[in-house]
Length: 170
Image (cartoon, rainbow, N blue to C red; front, side):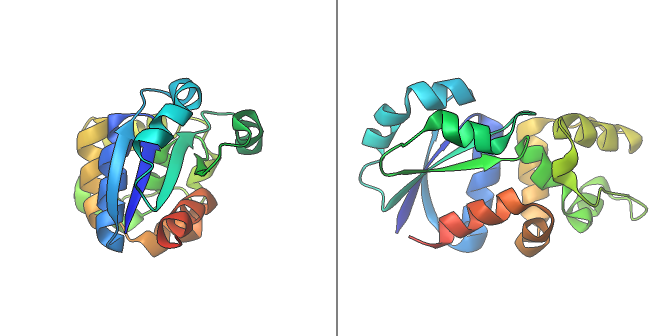
């Protein structure tokens, strides 16, 4: 089974690849370069991924209401839309143990509700800075994803659970 995924940016691509690997799912990924481009080119991307058993468009809400984004996209044929509450960095903030392993600090504190931050990338960057590092999207997203426990993220981030369920059920 192959799932086609359309993402907004390369850092999402590396994260999604690692998640699919953990779930044992083959992916074909297209990077659209922004939510508006996903929206305007969705039919073209869907045609390129038509050979896949399922197609998912994964977009960030960026401080907007996820339901409004779903309404804005409207009916998208055979493409399932998954909206990340704010940004994928909220998912990266969800697993304290993964972040402890990446930042090598057992005293690390993480938020109880990572989807509550409008700009989770800034929260993640602040967390990295507190530990003498700078958050670099693609590189660090991939490293965090190496250690991330999917169940932990699913329990803290309903938008991740929806995405994981979409990946698993074709």
